[in-house]
Length: 198
View 1 (cartoon, rainbow, N blue to C red):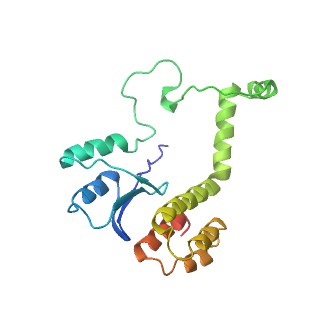
View 2: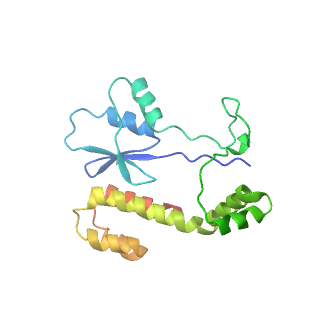
View 3: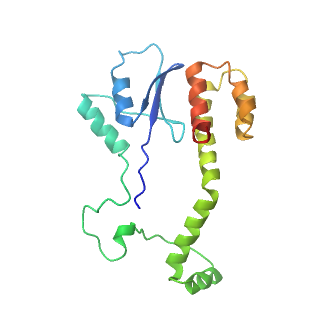
């Protein structure tokens, strides 16, 4: 079964106002069309990390989209056929060879598993991803919210207390502390932190 690729989204802010949110190309073109020079700086954030990113907006729309596509390639389905024939191995799985350093007792155990070391390692990784998937997603969402919050709200009242509530996963206290912050900033922080747990 093919996994559905995730679309990376971006959000642009001008001062405290949200300008656009969506795929990189759409956001870049919205920002490009703002009459220069803007009164307040425009910052574009990658939603998955909460960190700012720079797009080169020089030239025409096609040039901007070409550069953005190189910087932020569109998602690729995991079952997409390879463009070129591959060598030996398991090309349909997209196997990548990397070095792993383990103690001799670890290698002995791995080699004794059905299918050998590679199969055992893949199974262990998949099991760990399933077991900690929700916690990993929550941590990534919290980190993204904090990075965005630090940039856009670091000087706002109760920032330190709100940060502590965010990392304590005290949603009620967190949303209460940021209730008086500018609406677009507050709403985007909550979206980044809790959209997958609505």
